[in-house]
Image (cartoon, rainbow, N blue to C red; front, side, top):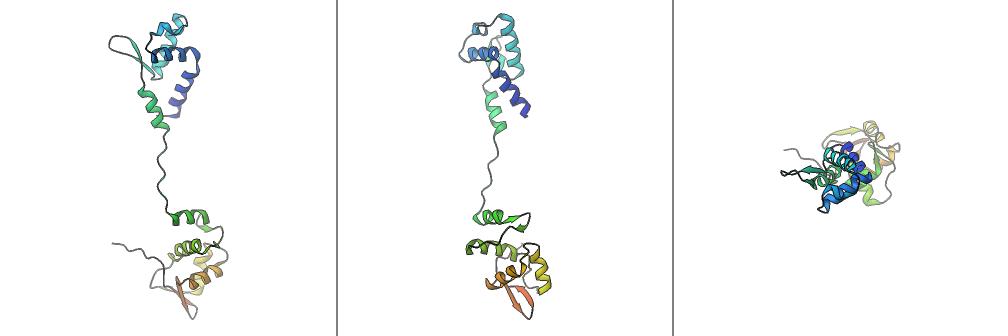
Length: 174
């Protein structure tokens, strides 16, 4: 259902004569009891029918099509947001388009970000310091601080300017 259909129904309910005829139908009355003259009632019923709010039953009597309101409600309902983990919330608040806005100062948040960054490095692969710097520069301009934090937290190990991943979660593909 389109936004146009929703606007159409709202427009119908805004028109006084159409609203009056619809209200009369809802209360179980005959459309002629709505008050306006006969041609105005006929025009209102035509508009209500085109908008899906009124239909004729088998005996030719007009009745309200209440399910139309349910259809409109479902059309405007937004899908539920998927649950987001605490780690994902931290990453969303500190990473913008893959780059760190700032290095978190709180350790728990910093660990979440550092674990995420450590995933760039393959376990078992040794990297020269220049390659590590290039990879970390993609996340933040202060790549030296990131490198130091990764080593201090045991996510990377270092020996003779060669680094390897030594901690953090590892994705296992089956």
